[in-house]
Image (tube, rainbow, N blue to C red; front, side, top):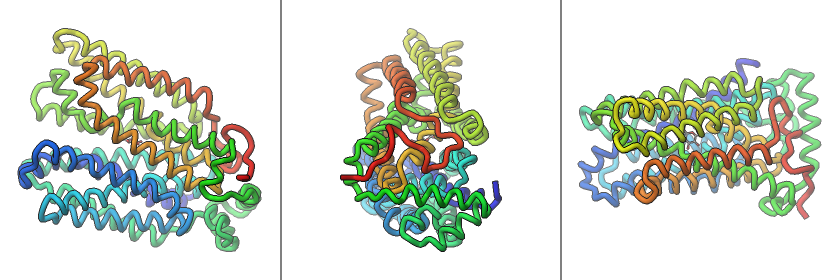
Amino acid sequence: MKPYVLLVASVAALGGLLFGYDTGVISGAILFITKDFALDTRLQAFTISVVLVGCVGGAAAAGWTADTIGRRWTLFAAGMIFLLGAVASSLAPNETVLLISRAVVGIGIGYSSVVAPLYISEVAPAAVRGGLVSLYQFAITVGILAAYIIDFKLAAGGDWRWMLGLAVIPSLVLVFGMLAMPESPRYLFKVGKDLLARAGLAHIHGQAAAEAEETSILDALSVKSAGLAAFKAPAMLYALFVGVSLAVLQQVTGINTVIYYGPQIFQLAGIGSAQDSILAQTLVGTVNCVLTLVAIFFVDRIGRKPLLYTGLTGMLLALAALSYAFSQPHLSGILSTIALWSMMVYVGCFAFSLGPIVWILISEIFPLQVRGMGMSISTLANWVGNFLVSQFFLTMLHRLGTPGTFATYAFMCIVTIFFIRATVPETKNELLEKIRVGGPVKSAP
Ligand code: BGC
């Protein structure tokens, strides 16, 4: 792979870093914001979740934007939105400004979560596409870990403005980086800028391979489509069904209960002081980050489906162990240790399977004409799933109990395994245009 391709993917992956940082940072900042602005519980919860509302809006608009102004300018716009949100939230004089600026940050996250993987998958050569999209997931996990560490470091002074404001740095790199990056050649062909597209392909693949790619892209583009109406075609609708389901399954197997509520779960598991449980959470962040490397290195060698099956089986067993540990009358000693290890195994297995591979698959399974739109709708579903799971986690704990809650997520892992078996094709090494779910593509009527 050319270093140039790695550079392009790395700049785009900064969108993932900001996604991770901005979703993770609030968990530490909220304690001090609550004090400064004297928030009641309701406002406190809304200050945490308003970002997800922005994400839903950003993800909904991103596909249309990426198909209209291009992938590159959409990512540039995401960078500007992140920048604006970071500056405004760190200087917020009151709760209203803070809420609005956190919603703006959410729009940036929504935008980048659609367009960063989309752009990377369109620029990447087929043989390394999975690894490069996994780089995006890796950046998310680095962002989350950085947020935990920075929160921890700044907690002594209660510097919530710095916690939120530090996102300015990667935002600036993303903005200036995207100015220097090329547009996706696939998008350029789509809008008829063939000369530029051809030059871009040759730069990425070398002359010979570029010609083969071009033939395949032009072939795919000869099928015309009509925006959202394209999804009336059964094959497109089926692809959308698979994309949306995968995106939702990534959330309803419970990952963000651990990412957002980790310290509370550790406390329930009898892990010492608040300090200890924040430290344990940093360990969770590290495991999440390091195990994503497994996907980067193996997803194009072993394939998407074997990694998914292995990861999901690990998640299932870890959740079963957690459920068992929490069902015992006194959670301490060996049971606490089992619970701690199970959390690590669960997150680690997610990190090399469902985490990156859902993003890879939803950036691969849609035909070029509807790729922006298909990713947008699937990602929107991912954010709605995220919002619902994180909103109802505490209610689930209350209604089903801790063992019942983890058993529910374990059951969803089984559902996910069967869903993948039944619907997902192996896409390793395939040219994007050759990937089909549910039969050949036909024009919309
Ligand atoms: C998911 C996020 C999650 C993150 C954890 C991403 O793939 O979409 O919801 O917080 O992984 O690493």
